[in-house]
Structures are given as structure tokens and as C-alpha cells.
Length: 296
Image 1 (tube, helix red, strand yellow):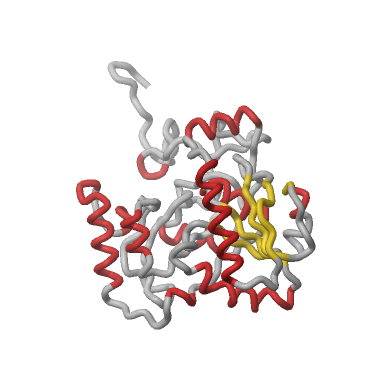
Image 2 (cartoon, one colour):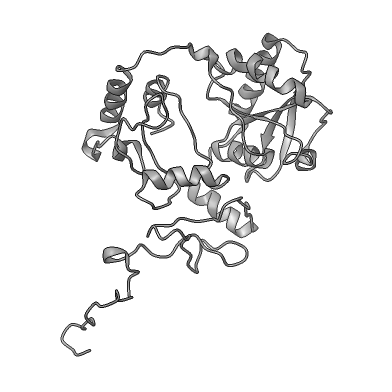
């Protein structure tokens, strides 16, 4: 749904926030607040401009959060979003939208690979970054650019060794257009533009690079991609514990199996049984189970 043109157009009336649930504890707590204490890799909710009051229900997806069953389809979700948006008047133009920034370059490269977009990586002295963020706002909000790139600003501590992950010339500072490899572990600098360049020049470079990228990037088939990654031993180390937590006990669920990480840490155990007890385990005080036609 998120990649559909109609949904994207409806989302323009909102400030869209993508929580970094495996990189930030505060964000993960917010996901839990939307899922009654559980933690899973997706959650959805519409919030008022204060960022706190809920304008919809919550759930794993827009259709769940907006209480639109499968029968309503995408059109029902879009109509619900448009109805909510109609109750608010924008106080600023879309051209003033805040420019994206990740927690680290390695995360930005990984997400760019997963979303199959080019990454615009901005490397500048600390004193110049805020001015660059403001200067890039109209460009990254332009209809020809928005949604086609990810953007990240280099920080001293987490990104000190970013050049080790990329091929191609990479100067000390500049706008670097980077193409991530299939698994987001490394990348290649395809274009480099000086920080002093005008927005028109940067836009031209971005559009040219994206046109080439679109012609040569093969769409990933999720199941095949995951299988190849497992065979190659690919693993991305998150800042937060990897996996989901479906019984709301505050601890990530683990199990042995095909989703295991390199050290045997797994994503989650099977879904909980009745009242949150794992299947096959009795709740304290519960009567012993009986096998059909037999005794305890």
C-alpha cells in the first residue's frame, strides 16, 4: 500500500514519521504504546499536530489503525485519511518540510538498500550543517525529487569511518550520491557535488543519477533476497535487541530456527496461546490438560 500513488498523494497532507524502532529506545517505546505494550516491527497511528493526541485507532497497518477491514480496500483507507486531514489547516508550505536524517550512515545505507533508493549523504563541517539542512528543504520537497532519495548528514562519532564502506572517490566534504549494494553493507559513490553548488546543479545531478539507477536497479523479490542473504551470512547489527515481543513482558521473544542471527539469537518464539501463555505451557493454577480419549 505504501508504494501506491494514491496512498502517497493522501499522505502529503500529513507529516510522516518513520520510527527507528531498532535503533532508538525512545522510538521503540512509542511503538509499544501503539500496540498495548507489545513490540512488533510495524505500527500505525494518526496523531494531531501536538504529536500526542490520537486521531485514529492503532494497529500494525493503516487499515487496522483506521478501522478499515479488508473489504474496504485501499480506497477506504485513503478516504479515512482525507477525512482526518480535512479537519486541519496547514500552517506552512510543503517546501518547508524538515529534511530527513538518520542515526548513522550505516543505517542510512542499509535502509536505502532495502527501499531501493539512492542515498544523498551530506558531509560538512559541524558549523555548516544546520544551514545546509535549511537550504536543502525546497529541493528535497520538490515534486521531481521527493520520495526518490534518502538523505543523511554525517556526524563525527557514528560516521567517522563511513568511507571504509564505499567505493569511488570521496572527498573530505560535499554532497555524495551513493548507491548501496544489494544488502546495504557497502556502497558506491556515483556522483560527488561540492557544497558550494547551487540547488539547480544538485537537482540536475540527482535526477540524472536516479534515471540511471531506475534503468539498472532490478526490483527485489523479498523471499529470494532473504534466502540469498542467509546463504551469504549477511547480518545487520542493530542498536536495540533484534526481534519482536508479542506477549508484552518487556523482553524480546526468541526461538531457534531459520530466523536465527549469527550467534543463535532469534526473532521470536511462536505466538502466545490463550491469555498470553506460550503454547504447550500451563498457566499457574490452571487444571492439567487431558489428551482426547485418555488420562492425564
